[in-house]
Length: 182
Image (cartoon, rainbow, N blue to C red):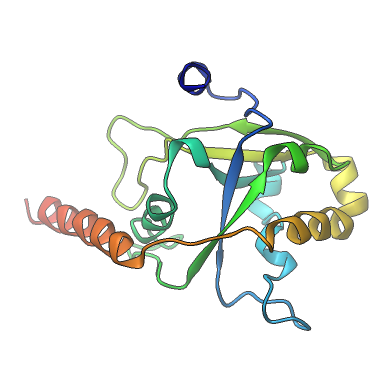
């Protein structure tokens, strides 16, 4: 199995037996049932649509839940030099085989974001993956597609250790402060 993981290259399909993580705000709740995430947690932003109808996820085999959340806390808010809050996040696991079975989803691909010298506030993400939607089907069937994904993911909320996330984020932010001083 480890050979399969190490042999995957950018753009390759993830194994159907694997899972991906989707990070969402813990304040985005369904209006009727506050115990489940809202559909917007699994929806495409305008930037996602411009980027090829891809929903950003993390491949479970290349990360831990703590690392996924910590990368949020090490990232700048769009257009600023301020770090994003991370203590208001939660993670849902999505089975690759399930999501690929949904009409309107083309694939789930390995899509790592790795730079030799990443800019401050844009940490590398060796686990980045994307759920790739078919534009035509997504445009016609968006609510149905998102309901299927949410119905699947709502029962797969992933626990993580916030103390470990805090440690990782503080270490990164301290390194950034030291770089800015130099």
